[in-house]
Length: 159
Image 1 (tube, rainbow, N blue to C red):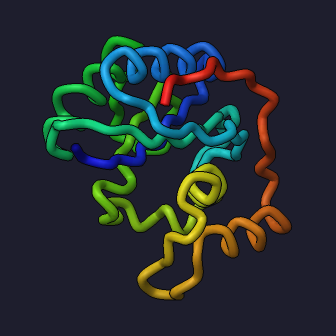
Image 2: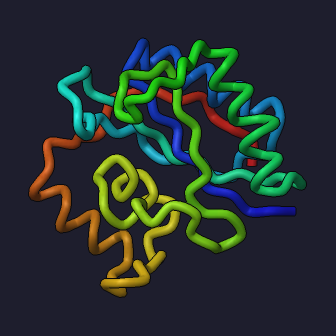
């Protein structure tokens, strides 16, 4: 089985779309952990704030098949429209961040919408350049950012 960390993000009906995406993931994969949901400002846009949640799951699928056959399909079902502006508002965005211990998206060490939720699930993950663990980055970042935990009750997921 592959151990995968995925980021869920939305700023169009985010409370509804994060829950729907989690339900779909729960029906199709074994969810091992779910972070708190964080409210963060969008990058490169004046759009509405995003809600972001990190999820750890198990799957037999390869990273490619997980993204192309499942995560992209969830995005499509939930109305994601890809635009040339990669910072455009979206109903849902599902990104693989870590796959079997390998960091797929180095932004996990840079942006609050990634650092904060993933610091809850993999606090000792260390950045390749600065060698600082996510838990330390999160402690520093929370002092400088407008990000905050969003009061959002997620359903329990069987472990």
